[in-house]
Amino acid sequence: MAVDQTAPSTAPEDDGAMRKAPTQKRSRERVEHILSSASRLIAERGSDTMRMSEVAELSGISIGSLYQYFPDKAAIIRTLAERYNAVCRACIAKGLANVTTIGELRQAFSALIDEYYDIFFAEPVMRDIWSAMQADKALREIELAESRQNAALLADAMKRALPGEAMETLQTSALLVMCFGDCAMRLAVSTDETEGRALVEAYKRMAARSFAPETG
Amino acid sequence: MAVDQTAPSTAPEDDGAMRKAPTQKRSRERVEHILSSASRLIAERGSDTMRMSEVAELSGISIGSLYQYFPDKAAIIRTLAERYNAVCRACIAKGLANVTTIGELRQAFSALIDEYYDIFFAEPVMRDIWSAMQADKALREIELAESRQNAALLADAMKRALPGEAMETLQTSALLVMCFGDCAMRLAVSTDETEGRALVEAYKRMAARSFAPETG
DNA sequence: TCCACAACATGAGTAATCCTCACATTTGCT
DNA sequence: AGCAAATGTGAGGATTACTCATGTTGTGGA
Image (cartoon, rainbow over the protein chains, first blue to last red):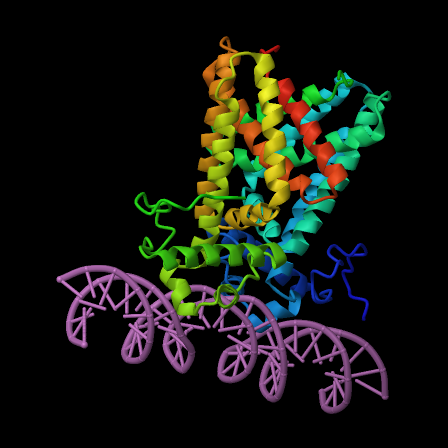
């Protein structure tokens, strides 16, 4: 494998989703083009009806070239999901990093959800990508693992704010809160903005009430 | 899960999911056989990999006969979903019918969730069917409408237990609680029974905390 | 500059799968 | 029995994910 000129020292997607790491500059641009074309098509009509031929055409390349970068259709979905997941994970990690009290937790979480909602609202295609992931057993496992990772971040923050609680209990709560967050976001982008905002606010209140000592 | 099918006079599924209302006895039996075959295949390998030829073979009929009862693959998924939805809706309506106080609401809801979990645990294929519904834009709308219907039942019960609250607020909360319930169930059947139980209990606590007057 | 080789591009073709349709068989009724 | 309506059948059309043999472009050394 030759060392290329503008080497991205940290390989962005090196998890097997892509067939090979593109070494030339144009190749990397094409990968971006493919992903944005796919995203657009998924947003328009859903992942099921996204045709590989359409992705190729919209990207201005041939079918063969498309398959040089992605081994199959699911790989495109997976790569898109991983990108969004990375954004969200970073957002969560950053938002909860310095939390040490319940008040801080509630405030940080509220801000986090607002940010999360903005991301979702700007890219409602995330909902369709999530749906596509859920339809496949293997991809569903990936999404669950991602949720567990995010839940672990939240559980850590909760443990700092609520040191008296058992870690196991916190992990369970955190997993629920995280999955419910995704659920609320998908719900919010499925309706008009007014109801969406109300749902997000209601979710924030529900979550905030979970950030409290166990009362029996 | 016993879904009653002994009333030929009142067409049971007359919503376009089925190609024609089967009039002869054997036809109705075949429809049942098709649905149980499909359910089994979906449970085994997911709806994507369920092949219409497999459904036909497992049902002991030809491809042509299969398509005489169901216009397409999605119709089978939809019919299965509608049956499960009907069971759940009846369960919710019955469980919340006589609620008039917060205490009753919490207790009824807790019992309801236990029942719901039992249904889900006995038929984890519901998760796969739900996933299949989510993958399609039109079917997703159906599921959302179903959730809204269930939420309306809960909102009514909440209004009786919490007459001071605005109906709009209650509807928002109820929709969230219902969707989160589905989410929790799917999560619960995706892990071992111990964690599943813990998740369900944690969800019940979260929901119970929502059944309270607005505190700011 | 030229050449050899690796990387990349192409699209006709293959296999898998959903679904149709023209025709055969069974059932219900008189 | 005999006819019409209902039901059954599976080869085949249409679509689509994906492959592969072949052509084109870029890279590095002599």
